[in-house]
Image (cartoon, rainbow, N blue to C red):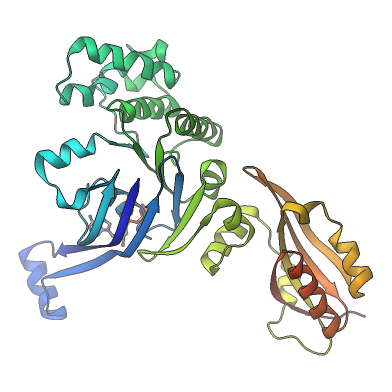
Length: 364
Ligand SMILES: Nc1ncnc2c1ncn2[C@@H]1O[C@H](COP(=O)(O)OP(=O)(O)OP(=O)(O)O)[C@@H](O)[C@H]1O
């Protein structure tokens, strides 16, 4: 449904005024600088999928999502939505194609001097729809987002969550096939965030809407996304099904996001004792992630029995990621170097993701 092929975006920034320009040009030899916000991005979001793009501030998330409806035109590469290559279009043809793409924003972008009804009606008015038709289209949308009783109120009379519901109804007014969500819950408290995410999930299921969202919050990815991409320095560095990403992120950045989210770090006292290289008298400290059958299998006691390695559990928790249960543990494996190596191989052979965090001196 959404396809980005080899998309790059460079912003050229002119120096502010003539005087500054002269001063800076003599220093750098140029009167403008450039920022490459996206580098060769390939992304495919199939119909009906909720796809999250997560990254740190400045990674390129907003630029990426704004390239999908050409609010930002890529410097190179192609963007297609619903089989139509948008990067070939301009003017009226592009405007028409944009009717198929709704968008919501962090700060809602409602018109304060228009009622809830009139805000939702706006895109339909711009499309030249007749008043009667508009009324017929807007009423069920307000029903869908749970604001049927607020049609005549103004944005200032609404809570943040209600404003975002109006924005969602407005985005759906032209019956788009794709909804773009630009940090849609970042300005909301956790409870309201939950209700907006539930609404988006509901819309996705009921209308078969394809959703591309950008966020810096793992909670958003965990709650509603089917698939996730990780962006860093304008590049997509990792892409996975959400269950796989939460079980075994492939990149260091992915692991950092996950560890911050799960708050599963070794105790500080242990971190201070950790050394990178194993020695004759050290034990490995490992982070284990397991899902599926492994969650209900008594692997740790088997490890002791079958590999002769004792396990000291330092932290553990079980998380539900959509339909999957994910177990996480930080543990010290206590045994000789050969036996602990055998234990790690045993765990890996049972589909556990094992990350060696370091080694600690044995106390025995
Ligand atoms: N209009 C612009 N002009 C110049 N540089 C820009 C422009 N928009 C974005 N950038 C630069 O492009 C890079 C990516 O910015 P972008 O806003 O896409 O990141 P982001 O991941 O959305 O960040 P945040 O989470 O802080 O909003 C940054 O270095 C930013 O300064």
